[in-house]
Length: 211
Image (cartoon, rainbow, N blue to C red):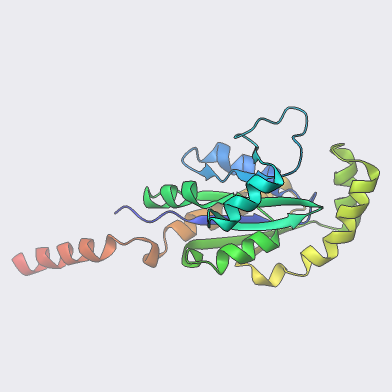
C-alpha cells in the first residue's frame, strides 16, 4: 500500500530550533529526504555546494524562477532562497517524505501550490523572546548587526503561526523532537494518505463473500 510522499514543512524564527529538530528527524528516519534549497548568499565556513545549499548567483537564481524550476522562493536579508521543484516531485512519486526547513513565506507558497494537499506544516515557537536572542548569540554564526536584524524580523515571522497545521513550543528539545515524531507517524497513517486501503478492504470483503 505505497503512499504518496509528504511535504513536511518546519518553520520558525531564527534561533527557535527548527534546524536542530530537522537534523534529529533525519537521524531518526533515514528514508526522509531533506530538501536542499538554492540560495544566493555566500557559503559559510564548512558549507558545501549541493549539501547545505545549492549556491547560485543572482542571475542563475532568477533564470531558474523564470523557467518555473522553483517550487517556492523568497528574498531574505538581501539574498534569494528557493526550493528546486524536480527533486521534490521525484521523491513524492517514490513515496518518500521531503523535509523543508524554510520560513513562513516559502511555506505559504508551497501550501498554495499544486502540491498543497500533500503538505504537513509545523511552526516552532521559542519559549520566550529572551531565550530566542540568547540562542542566536550562543551559536556564534552571525555578527551582532545580523542578530539584531533577525530579532527585528522575529515578531513578523511569529505572527504567521496560525497558518500552520501544528504549532510546537520548543522549551525542551527532546520533548519537541518526540512531538514531531508523533505528528509525522500520525500523518503517514491518515486514511487519505494510503491509496491502497480501498483495494485492501475490497479483498477483505471478497473473503467474506467466499465464506
